[in-house]
Image (cartoon, rainbow over all chains, first blue to last red; front, side, top):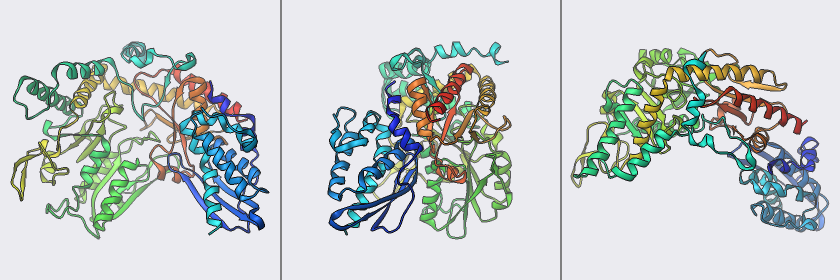
Length: 145
Length: 418
């Protein structure tokens, strides 16, 4: 019963009490991403300040506990860091998720996001975890345009 | 009441999959037959034997194996014709699935090479479907509308999951009505004979997506009053890769061919061809031979168990499931709450818990296989204002004990997310 270990306390906590949820002004870019296989969706905005500092990530969406908690964790990790730092976290998170459970995650880089390590063993759920993170990456690229 | 005539434990022994365990010793509780059904030994063995001893191409080989293969393939067509009450075996067209059968009919309309007025289609003409359709009975018609400039209209769905049937939607401009016989999400059985009468009254044709009805109820295509009926093998204890289009012979003869190729022709010149008589006119290329033969074995199996008995057994299971699910706090059944005109497919939403999480925990902890998501019926879910549902669907091999396992699982899911 490895699957239930996927539902780490931290994930359930973020799902029940999402951080930073809701769309806010001002923002530099807004994106809308969907997962066509399950209908999960997210609208996400980013506001980037001086020296590439991420001032705000705001989002609204619907989906399973994994996709919603991932967005909440993303909000906590991204705000206050620089774009460059956060993209390194996104890359490590993507590597972990696509590693089929075979990858040792770098906790120093991932912080709380390491709680999603169990999700990587479930190919059907990897897209849930990555939805908001891919949306964030897309929004950051667009905000620089 | 079904326990005397219907021995579910004996039936389960025919299906090898029920003798296996899932990892960690969990028993398999398979409640996803609306998605695809499991296969009995009788089907597996028939296919194995044909592949091992009788296999060759059909319809063209002048040798013993060719003759045996052709006989078995055409014999399967006879069995399927009998199973759905087709007046003629030539009205049974093998396709790869129900989607192909639906597309075949959609492509028959608005083809400039065909002048039969029943199949001409252009601006001002109308096609009628419903909001409860599977994507395979929506998208082919959307594509047809894009090709021809015709208009797509649809019946809505009521709050309790019934077809919001308004005869007035079908008018003199309607060329074809295409609706599900039984909804793959709601379980609703639609009043198709009534809709067919209305369609014929205005000179329109009617197609039924019977993918969810033919496996579970005795179906007689002429009693339904339909012109076209599509269904698929893998949902009726047969293999995947084989589906069926039944249509009235006179319509099949009037329709243009769908796919061109070997076996569908009579004579070919460099600039033109004439076509084989039905059914082969619509079976271009080497067909799924062993799959068709497997489907023949599947209808033999279902007939031997008895479609009336299967229907009654599923009705018992559905009544049991509706009663049990009603008692779960925060659970909302999406579809009819009563047994009237409904089959053994029960979809539901649980307050505050996403279906993906429900499905994951049911599978992982209890071995309960259900389907979660929009079940290829996104417009229907939009209609109910929910992104997804959890769906349990029953078949001849399911037991009330398995529904108990589902209910225990759902209580546990609620505990995890409490």
